[in-house]
Image 1 (tube, rainbow, N blue to C red):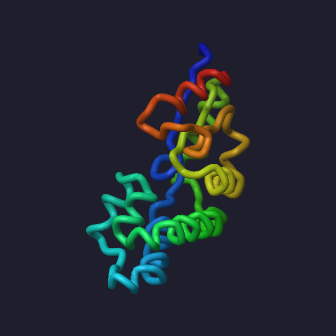
Image 2: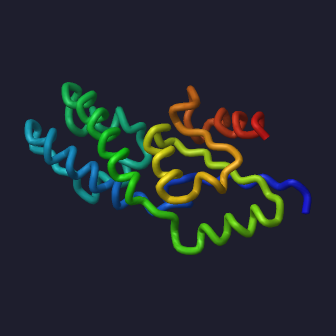
Length: 154
């Protein structure tokens, strides 16, 4: 087998993390959304995944709560990272790729501290040849900067 490279996203691809993410947002909205009477509802799930998080939090909770919400989401993400696990069968897939000589990388928009903790606690870290987080790039996905960093390390 030639030296293939497989690049995976982290959240929702390698690991089942969205439940923890939505739980964190519910906590944040319960703590910081009382001023505006805002709750984290099912209607807010899609924009919470597609909009830049600082913008989503500021738009939803108000400009004065945006910074506090970002601080809290980082703290909660690091705490939750200890409990996030790979999807069933994903470790077997990665093991087969590595056994066949492939290189494996992760490119995620998640911040470096919580992504590193997830990779460590989930057992994924030893399977990776490269890892780029949203904290490592100026332009997040879908911009190609992260892929460029991965390719430069291979």
